[in-house]
Length: 178
Image (cartoon, rainbow, N blue to C red; front, side, top):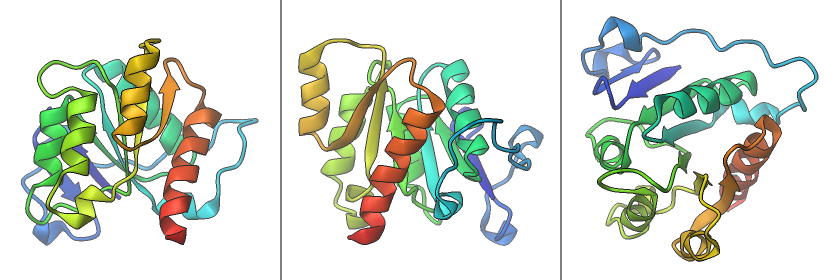
């Protein structure tokens, strides 16, 4: 299991500690909780998916992280903004996520800027990462722009655990078949 938090600017990969950057105590990985009672079962292969959550609100990142952990996803990275996500994506020796879940409205590099930077990346591995937009915006034009920039889907805030897991499974499953 690996864990990264842009707020801490640290990365840890329990499977390969020799390549990990220094880790503050707050970034030590913990075991994922058991799935929520009554929750729809997630595909077993989803446990191996690497997810990056990008949102300027720590509470939103925690909620989404908990939903993903309940589905069995063990590798979750967090960034508090678009620039932090880009820094992590371009960090040497840091694994690339299989999918990015991003907010749209953030200071500095916002979700649309992150989408555009990922799609225009010269690194083919980064350019191909599926992205899900999770936003409180009900502006149809902004949602259309996110889709035009290559978002796999746009989900509203709040979204249910099942909606988020289904979107992650759809986007990463399609990538597995490509």
